[in-house]
Amino acid sequence: MIYAVIAILIVAVALFILSYFVNDKFEDLESQVEQLSITTMQDTYQMKKKIKILEEELLPEGLDQDMISKTSK
Image (cartoon, rainbow, N blue to C red; front, side, top):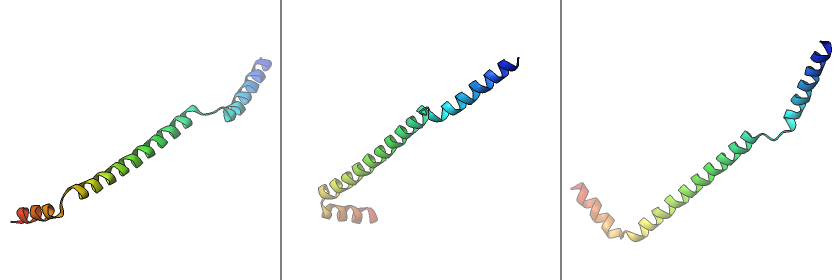
């Protein structure tokens, strides 16, 4: 009986120590998701910035003033 308890304790300590050296797959997955999120946010920001620049280039300035004056009347 005492040998069984000692064996279980040794196995428990060995597994506990081993758990610090095993690579955590959830941590890797979380890191990948975080990196994907950051990349997506950067891409979205760049696209919005490009769209704003294109809208400014394509819309004539006089047309903007005409639209503002028509809506204020």
